[in-house]
Length: 417
Image 1 (tube, rainbow, N blue to C red):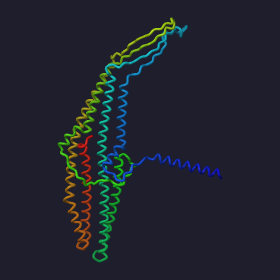
Image 2: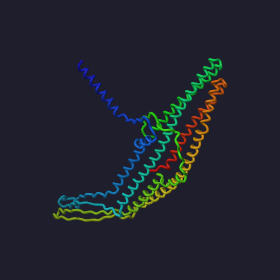
Image 3: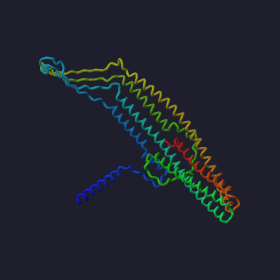
Image 4: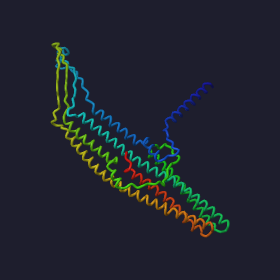
């Protein structure tokens, strides 16, 4: 019995240790009680694997630059020569021992190091492009999540308003001022509002998942979002934005790529000069018991391989990089004009809805509810007005989301690091 108790104790300890180990292996979660846009952008900088990959590639390029500048190692030489096939082979042979050192000519090591350093610079600019694109994605995902959150609250408000409508209709039916089919219709409207509320809740959850993915941590926990869709945006002048195109990360990256490709051409030219090889050998003449030494120089003759293929490759890649640079300038110019026009239209629509449509919709709804409560109109006349009011509210929220997403596009040409 004692042995059984001991065995059970050991099993319990083993299970407990396994559970603790499993818990230790679970991915850590980042919990945000209230997440703002700036916090989301900062978290993406830390957590997004895409940026971690880009930083690792920069480090790899630095390693290649370090290796490219290393002087080649000497080779140790040991061999037996002039050994007779028959007789005293070991005693009559000649023994050599020494070093062979290749010496790069034409500043090849410096060119190779420079090419890899410029490649590292290109990777750094590539990181900036990825960072800027990531900020845009996080900004857009945050705007969508904030919109879905406020849309959910609006749907709750609509559902609560329909509940009051059902209560008013029931009171009128009890007073004999309305027919029961009107109550049934009001209850149908309530069910419809509750269906839309559940749908909005599901879309809100999905938007939060997409925001977590944009940040780079699908296990993070976000309870609420801080911020308002109804923010004030000033439209920057198109001329000022166009002037910033030359400093955009894509253009800077294109310039870095051109410099890296030119360095590859210079390296290919330097590699046409072959390495000089110097040999210094000690020779032991075993038959005569004499010591001697050998000194030799060797250099390959560039008769067949003159590195023309590498040189042609480098020039073609440089031409391709030039074409990509010109193409990127065209793409950015079009993207800027589209983003500026989108922001202009989105702001105009949002302001029109806020100042002209929403107040009128609220006025019409209040008058409609008062007339229905007084029995001046039927439910069939009251419901369309209520639906129009709900549509206007949601349309206004959508316009605010469009403004935030349009601003995320324009901000690419405003904020450069």
